[in-house]
Amino acid sequence: MVKRVFPMLPLLLVLPAVVCFVSFADAGPVSVADYSGPIRVACIGDSITFGAGIRDRAKNSYPVQLGKMLGQKWEVRNFGVSGATLLKKGDKPYWKQRAWKAALDFKPHIVVIKLGTNDTKPQNWKSQGEFVADYKDMIKTLSGQDPKPRIWICKPVPAYATRWGINDKTITEGVIPKAEQVAKETGAEVIDLYKPLSGKAKLFPDKIHPNAEGAGLMAAEIYKVLTGKQPPTKTPPGKKAPSRPAKDVPATAP
Image 1: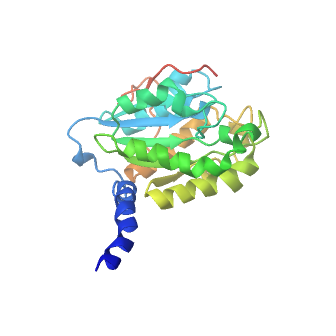
Image 2: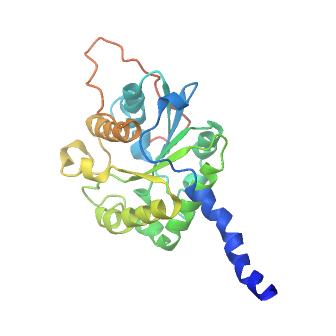
């Protein structure tokens, strides 16, 4: 009888960890009716989330535009940090930035992660073997919050040139496949930002960072996934959009 019990112990020890990852994912759009107050959305990311290079980023970064699209029921905040990496051994790990603690303290109901672009730099990608484990650790930390948030991970936008070590080859052949693996193994949901921004080099003035229009396309894609609806038409000039503007936490300037 004892021989039959011991082989089951490893499975029993592993099972809680599996449940921790998989149980938080709910397929489909967010049901606004399930929330009594504002739905808090944390946009975690790098300079592209921060809005580096965007004219008047305080009004035009993708989190701000997303907040305007979503409206008063939602509270969207920008936790982007220029140069940040997902990799803990990267040259600027998101884990060590004030924005990471601020994002956790925000107690979000929804988390949108757009990291991986800076990880493609050669000095960072040398630790690619730890990318999946680090991503899963981030999701585990977030999913351990109260309230337990729904988590979406984004496929990065294209890189239209190799600059600062950032390159599209590693994005498409390294980061995106690993992000898909993370989603499969954790139950996290996926937002594809690569495809909607493909073939739109003109929206990337420095070939890496999208301009306000490009950030708007990012926001629209995220909006569609979160709500299951097409994004609202642009607010006519002079008319105030019904929204809670995203708030920025201190971050390294672009």
